[in-house]
Every structure is written in structure tokens, then in C-alpha cells.
Image 1 (cartoon, rainbow, N blue to C red):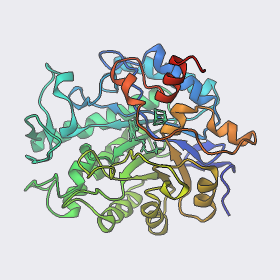
Image 2 (cartoon, helix red, strand yellow; image 1 turned 45 degrees about the horizontal axis):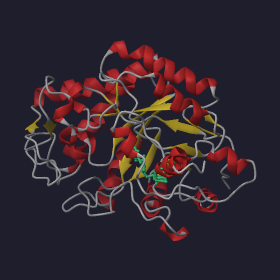
Image 3 (tube, rainbow, N blue to C red; image 1 turned 90 degrees about the vertical axis):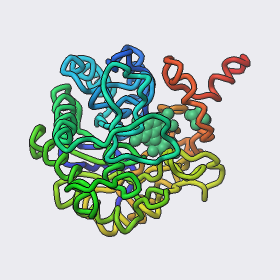
Image 4 (cartoon, rainbow, N blue to C red; image 1 turned 180 degrees about the vertical axis):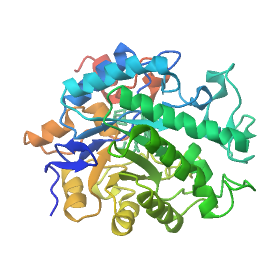
Length: 375
Ligand SMILES: Cc1cc2nc3c(=O)[nH]c(=O)nc-3n(C[C@H](O)[C@H](O)[C@H](O)COP(=O)(O)O)c2cc1C
Ligand code: SF4
């Protein structure tokens, strides 16, 4: 029976336990998306806190893919030295680091790249979350998009990262191609599931071609889109099986997007009691049963008891968290040290505020406590 604090491995990465820091935008990049000292400080704290694997915040693979301010970019070889410094920082702290890469498709923010081209989507879309004009990406530019992912993965490997995670969830570019609600193309990249999967299959092949056979390639997938005409578990499991056949090394199961109904997205609030936790665990369990690669469960984990239950009961191979590590970068070491009370994060999402202002994300509760002089 698997145990949370056992050693294990995903492809060539050796992991000291089965906890993962899920990808978290830190709002610490400079104007062009280069890694800063603030980025390294954030990851330095995290790498010393005992978490088995750290997945970086999403890195945009083309200038027209930036979504949030101060996002880290991975679209230019000049960014490799900063990424290298980040990987060295995490390794010096004893951590392992996988870089998450994304093209955000129609969720890109045109105000952040006024000179750098058009907003792409698989097809003309009618999504209430989008206020700007989008362009269906022409077939001949799909190859550029695939190559941008492959180049970004190559840069991560050059920089000394331990692997890459494709962002295939949360209604961003890959998810937009996979889902019939956003992909209404009439060519070989739209229509049937095989066609909607095509860009992902070709991206995986191109990335593998750049990084070789034994460097880990993972993906974060939405187990369900929680949006009308989106994918449900039937189609996402089919995607998972194809990815396994095509050589993916691990799949993290999330769900929903900014287009989902209130509190049905990936970053849910009101996780108050034990049974509010693990809100995508039922989706992860179905992947674990049907797709034979390591499965990572994410979404609302707060208590050691719940995490251990997921591992022992074979619902997933790994459990990842994002917000608990913003408040407590040393959470895993706290648990290992015997204080096994639940994570102190109250899931209010106040951590975005300072990130949006360019100061890096930080816990709102901690900020308020410090301001009231009670720290
Ligand atoms: C500040 C913040 C930034 C996030 N950035 C990313 C990201 O870059 N990529 C991603 O896949 N998910 C991102 N997420 C979602 C988390 O990875 C995770 O899926 C979600 O927060 C649920 O896990 P949690 O309940 O442990 O926070 C972010 C969440 C937060 C709160
Ligand atoms: S602000 Fe603090 S308590 Fe609120 S979600 Fe972020 S880390 Fe958790």
C-alpha cells in the first residue's frame, strides 16, 4: 500500500514524498516576464519546506499568451539564465522543480502586450468572460504554436528544471482546443475528439523530440469543464488514455475555468469542513482506475488525514496543493515534525491582490495580522 511519506518517482525524478505544490502564479516576473530576485526568494522558502515536488507558476510560451501581470515568460532564449537561477535556488533548498508552460489562447490579456500580435482562439468564440476581439488561429500558425511549447520545454531542460508540465486545464489554449464548447473548427483540428486532440498529441510529440525520452513530461488536465457543451469525464478519460499511449509521464486532475458557474472553477472558496476538501477527487479516482500513469489529485486539500486517505485508498498517486503553501511554505515539514493540524489557509483567495500590484502574491490573513500589530 502506498504511503504519503514514502520515496517514489515520476519517470526520472526521485521524490522524497507524495506531496506536490500545484502550479501557482506568483506575480514576481519583470515587465518582459524575466525571473527576478523576488521570484527566487519565493521559491527559496518553498523548497526548504519539505514538499516533494514543486510545479512552477504558468510560464507563457509566446508574447501573445500572457494573462496576468508579472507572469514568468518562457518565449526567448534570453530567459534561460533567470530560469536557471530559479532551478538552482530550488535545488539548493532540497526541492525538485517542474516548469508549467501555457498558451492562454483567448484568455490572454491584450493590455499586457499591445505591440505583440493578436489574441488567438481555436475558433471565433462566444464566451461571456471575453471582452476583446479574438482570431481563429490559422492552420499554418498552429505549427508555430506547437514549436513554441517545444522551445519552452527545451529551455526548461537547459535551465536545469527536473521536468515540464503542459497546462491542459482551466480553459486555457490546450483545453480550448480539446473542448467542443470553444473549438468549432472545421479543419483537422476541430470536430471529432481525435481532431480536437490532434494539437495536444502533436505538441507532446514535439516536446518529446526536444527533451528526449527520459525527461518527464506531465500535464494538468480538467477532468470536467463545468461549462455548457464542455467536456465531461467520458471525453476527458479518453484524452487521458491517448496521452498515456503517447508517452505522458503523469497527469494532474483539476477542473473548471473562469467560464464555469460561481465556485465551480479550479480555485474554489468556502473549504470549511473536511467534506469540502478534495473537490475533484472523484474525477481523479476515475483517471486512476482507467489511465495507467501516475495521477496527481488537486483542489481543496487542507488536512493530512484527507491526503493520506487519498494515497492509501489508491484514489491518486500524489496530492497537490497551491494556496496552503502560500500561507505555510513549510507545511509538509510541520506535519512531518508532528504538528498535524490542518493547513491554516482559509481559501479566501486574497493572495491574488498583492500579486496583481506587482509585489508578489502573499497571504491576506498574514498581511492583516501584520498591519494590526499582532504578528
Ligand atoms: C494565486 C494562485 C495562482 C495560481 N496559478 C496557477 C497557475 O499558474 N497554473 C495552474 O495550473 N493553476 C494555478 N492556480 C490553481 C492552483 O494550482 C490549484 O489548481 C487551485 O488553487 C486549487 O488548489 P488549492 O485548493 O490547493 O489552492 C493558482 C491558484 C492561485 C490561488
Ligand atoms: S490569502 Fe491566505 S488564507 Fe486566503 S487563500 Fe490566500 S493563502 Fe489562503
